[in-house]
Length: 383
Image (cartoon, rainbow, N blue to C red; front, side, top):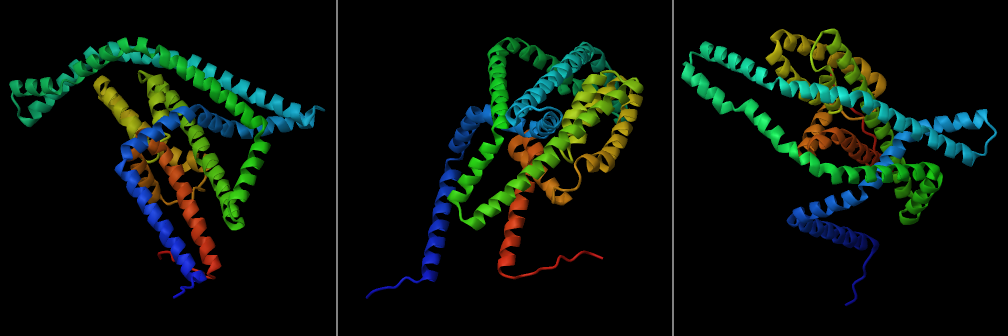
């Protein structure tokens, strides 16, 4: 008996076969998750300089285009020479900016850390006094309070950690050399990418349309614009916003007479790149330090950070970032929490743009399918 396979049966066979293959692959990956993560980590370590070079090229693309436009309109140089001069100009300015930043920030930061470490003994005595006062309020005896302080072992633990890691600085020499080599490779890769970006983009476009159907290739092209949009609006803008917040924190600490202003500004600026939780991660340790110095300083700094974060969230971020990520506050909180749980601090920072890209991809795909089915759904809003 001959069985005829029509178009609908063929489609079902393909769908079921692909679903079974995906299920088998996922089951295999889950069973060998450690090996998979180790393989991915090794691959990222090898490709890291080139991925970092792509990131640098992305950051330098807009400044390079502006400088190139100036060379083309103000000089009679050929387009190729204008591009080369523009790339060299922006990278020289980048290197100069990094060098000046390190020359100004690093010495002040190290000096603040050094002063803080020298004052640990005094802060330990202050903490002991606070704990004794707390013990009196709770009705604990002197012996019980001493036992509590000894069990905390806070500052001795910090001192032991510092003494433990200082000798390892000598072992970091090779890591530093490797890091510098990777930076040089990344810069060279970024230069080549910017010099030949049109050819590279055309090659990617040809590969896209040669591998996929026209509809799928058009979708991927549109999705790549979402990727560019999210990275420009979020990552670049967030770094600029955090830099401004760090500078404002430094100036505010100087005006209010707080010690360790460079260290405070550095911590607050760095942690500010993390959405939702970042301001708290940066402010809480600084408040604890100021509480050991002067409780009045801690209260004043807490009020200052609260006001600064309100200004940043309601004024600076809307101006710099805009409201163009396309995801609600719930999904921002969700992406930060999940990203932090999976990949730590880096996951908290990149969780929002990655989720925004996934969200945009699913949204665009759903809208495309709805248009194909001629289905129109209206979004309802609450009263």
